[in-house]
Length: 122
Length: 144
Image (cartoon, rainbow over the protein chains, first blue to last red):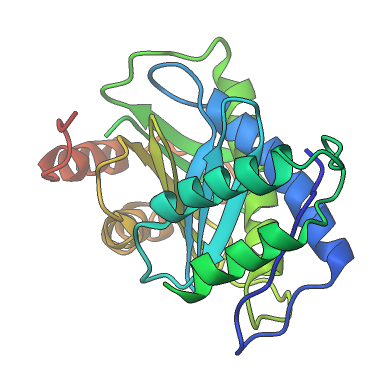
């Protein structure tokens, strides 16, 4: 449930302070699990989307338990394909990086660059 | 549509009903407490995460969330009453319906009822009947 990467893309809004991000990410991790257990039907799965008045949150959970969270404007759709692409960037540039240790904060330049290209191209 | 919850600002579950639910919980009071707690933390987290927001609490923050098996619709009034509907994930936002439940059914049968004291579970049959009628009348009631 620990935060290993955060990136801010919006030009209009100030980024959240790092401690806030850490706290919110851990809280979300627990809520994702609780919400999954509350399901009235079928096997438990966690929160996939969350709609609020000023933003929309999408969460993609990989089979290994890594969660990719993305906050965007409420009108945006198709965030789940973006998250899957980010997952494939993650597996290419982070996991295949020999110097990266699992569960440590991500500091790979190539991952940052490719992420920029992917998001700014949208 | 699976179930409906109504909580007041202190977490007391004033009303609960389910319709098409397959998987019943082991303990209903436990589940109600869990839902209230989850929504409380989720609401705080949403208010803190809002871009450009200053972390202030707002009634309109959280609107709905979805997992792969269900979708939860949330509507909160300024007095702290929380109206919650749990449906299958394909249903679009039912927040307006919850608003209707508040203004058309709750206000009519509960707020205007001198025998109903705040903070106690609702026992009015008028409320139960009109709620069930309204929910069954929604086009999404039986959609799977």
